[in-house]
Image (cartoon, rainbow, N blue to C red; front, side):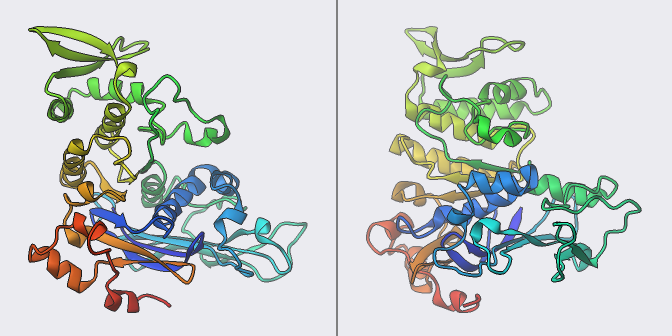
Length: 401
C-alpha cells in the first residue's frame, strides 16, 4: 500500500506531499490536477518497467511533463509504501534534472534511492563534474551491498539487484504491483487491442491498462480453485446489477475467443456474447475484473469509473472499491466528478484537489465541511453539488509552499 506520495514539478504539480488511505478518493473541479496526481504514479511505474524513454513517451514528452514556464525543472517522485509481511515501510525516490543551457527535452535521471525503515539500501546522484565520453558520471551516497555492480545508465537501478530479495520485492510492488485503469466505452470489445507503441506494458501480470487481455484474466479466475469466493463474488455483483445474469464464462479455456454471458428468461438460460452487452455493463465488469484479478495488485488506480455506468450501479461499484483492501485485493485510489459515487465514501477518505495560481494543491476536506457531513447536514456527494469541497487549510499549511 502506498502511504505517502511526494511530487515535484510534474505537470500542474509544483510541490505536493500527500497522505493516502487504503481507499482514497480525489475530487475537484475539472482541470485542477486530479489526473496529474495519479499519473505521477503511472509515470513511476512505467519508468521502472520500460525505462525513461518509454515512461516519458507515454506522457507525450517532457514538454507535457514539465510545468509550463518552469525554466529549471526538478521533477521528482517519492513514494513511501508497505509490503505484505514486511515490518518496515519502504521509501523509493527518483529525481530528474535539466543540464545547464538545455531545454526540457534534455531532462535526465539525476538521483535515485531506496530505503527500508531507517536503513538506506542504496542512494546515488549524478556527479556535477563534466561527463566522460558523453556519459554522465554517478556518485554513490550509499552503495548497495552487492559484489557485482550493474552498469549505471539513464534507467533505474531498482530491479537490477536480483540477489537483494527486499529490493526485488520493492521493484515488483511499484511496477507490476500498480494497476492504472481509465476504461473507455469500447472496453472489453473486439476493438480493444494492445497499443504497439508501449510493448513494455504487455508483459505485466494481471489486467492491462485498457483491459485488452480480459480473456486471460477471466481464465485465470476460472482456474483458481483455491479461491472459489472470487467467482462467487463476481457472480453476486453482476446479479446485483442485473438479476437475470447467472454467469460470465469463456467459450474455451484453451483458446478463448469470446466471453459468454448467461441470462435467464422464461425458465431457460440464454447465451449472449459479451460484445452484445451495453457499454456501461462492460465497463462495470472491467472494473470488477481489475478488482478480482489474480494475483491481486497492491495498488489499483481508477480514473472516473462512473463514465457510462448506470447511476444505480455506482453504489455497487463503490462497495467493491471499499471492500478491496479489507479482502487483500489491493489499495484503491479513485478520481471522480460524480456525486452519486462520492456519496458512498467516508468523508475522511476524500482528498480535495484545487488549482491556485496555476499550481495543483491536494489535501483533506475542510474541518467545517467534514463536520457538516459527519453531523448529517450534508452528504459526501453534496460536496460536489451544494457546497464545493475545500481543502483543510491547516493541513495545507503543513505542506511545502
